[in-house]
Length: 146
Image 1: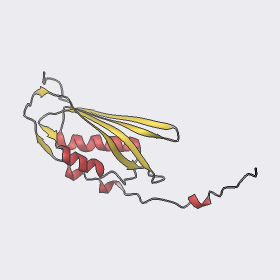
Image 2: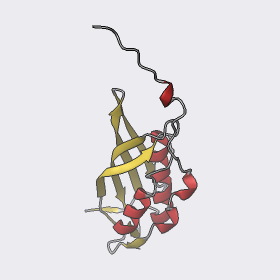
Image 3: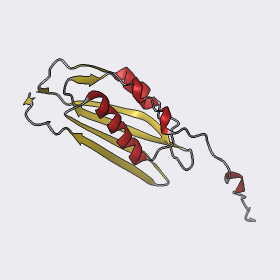
């Protein structure tokens, strides 16, 4: 059987539209009052539907996120969080940077005692990535544990 030559030049100039971080809807994030101020409650929000794109190729990066936090006075309102996370869909951002950006934006809006964002990025080319970013408030000690 003859070997067929494949011309890969058709892929050289293909790029998908990539948006920059300015389209991330950080201003849509809302909070609701936490009625048990001073009581430590660990809140975990998992989602398997996070998507951003590779800043080099524009190909999608899919991740399972787990956002864990101990509220101080406010909780993250979930509908606003869904809109916020969806706004990353076409943003060209490195996986490690996306994890840090999410942590930064959520800490800014809800001022938790502790927050951890874990992202389990789907494998591409045989490599998967797990990124973890964490914040602990300087005054996190001293709240009652229940």
